[in-house]
Length: 397
Image 1 (tube, rainbow, N blue to C red):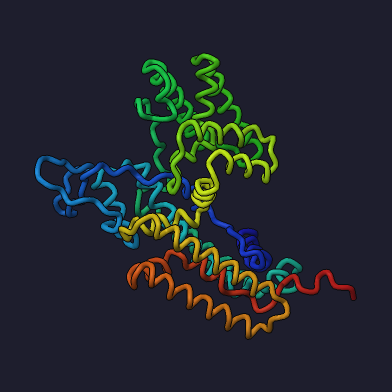
Image 2 (tube, rainbow, N blue to C red; image 1 turned 30 degrees about the vertical axis):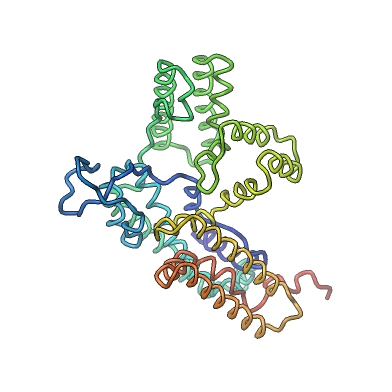
């Protein structure tokens, strides 16, 4: 736990100058899709719900809107997702990031006041306050576990079952009999991973080697089931880059996606060369959409616009405003000629102007939701330690 606290302090003490986009484990969920909502599916009142998926029979059903789900009341949000037929593993994917973000924000708020003392702790000159901080962070970690257990009964999310449906882009290209065999092999692989997790050795390299070996075992089994052409297509469709298919904010054809995956996986191009190739493939406007859609911060704004029943263009406008203001704030922070008091005043003015702009775009209710969602970004962007902890380290005596 002390090393965890020191890492948090280091990120705040050293990384502040570059406005880092450091995210915790909740960010691993950022590029996953929202649960699919069937057209016409409405919410039922809690007392009238008798099944996980609402029955729809005749008559008009109120249209579903994300704003009907209260994201600040986790049990209510969980129950609302279940009532509209959301699979349990998707309920975990939607709610777990909210829990992680909530407690990560609390940890940041605890460590921020002590960020400029990082070098004291590392050098051993002082440990005043470290014990209390470590205990407080440990207590938050326990509360996080309790929150997850209270929501789900267990912190472990159920494994999403592999699909063998015709419209599943990962397997839909295969004949039905092969789809079933591949899906069954994937289920067996997931079972092996779950069993291994119960007795996994504490040594990280050994765990990684064991997981790689199980993946190789699955790959060998699938390569034996499929023809060389089918195996190559399967690898492309299940590539880590194939997640772009489900990223909100950009729509790619299968042909475009295949070419993007090829370019990324060949790994022969430098970043500028890859940018030129992708821009030529998609055109400048759609390439900009692709770049923006891959940013976790933009995905946050998309989800906010959905909850507020606003158009996707609202998220684009907010994103562009935040990017513009972030560049201005960074310029002020990097301006060593500016007095600390002047810098703080200008950052405060810039923050107030952005908040007023958010109110214009979203309205008062939307602005409040935006400020709650962007709390961490606002604090990182418009505040700085009273002094640079690295100042003078490289100076000559």
